[in-house]
Length: 200
Ligand code: GAR
Image 1 (cartoon, helix red, strand yellow):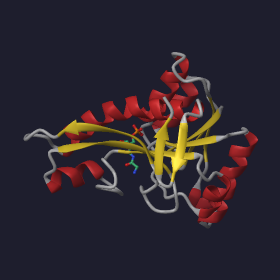
Image 2 (cartoon, rainbow, N blue to C red; image 1 turned 90 degrees about the horizontal axis):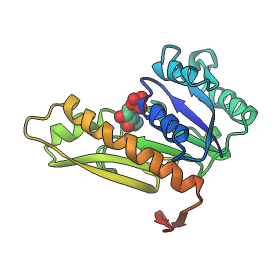
Image 3 (cartoon, rainbow, N blue to C red; image 1 turned 180 degrees about the horizontal axis):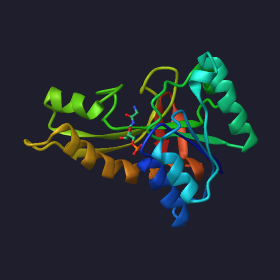
């Protein structure tokens, strides 16, 4: 399966997907990495592994629709069947969703539906929860609300800061994202309403 990974920054989740493919855990190919930030370290990670990596400048394209049309061109040119959002800090619009409905995944650093949106780990600390975690879900037209594929819990410690909690959640993100992608690639997910059933 040809995969596109959309990124905005550091790219550690991209790295986890690359490593899973290179180790043979995931039978898929990243055919393109697309960033909305020119200086995203994720672009360098991709290049180090010989993966086609491009920057699409949203500011040059005037509107969200034109920007997503440009992304669609890159996706089609690289025969992408699945899109992974990996620290991609933009809301997916109608243009991309219309063409890739049910084929876009996101990783979010919270146990959704709690703490959607930005700074999820800080939201968790500020709220005083005892358990935090991460979620891989399908993307739909509402922010961080699509059907949930996998989640993993992380205990919150009394002396946790936003950063220490984010680090421990990130370790779990790097495990569940490749696991969730593997389920999609192996066609082991079935939808029942908004519930995602895993075929053993
Ligand atoms: C990750 O923690 C990811 O879950 C989060 O951004 C970080 C990206 O790190 N994504 C979101 O908050 C999306 N709402 P990475 O660039 O090292 O993968």
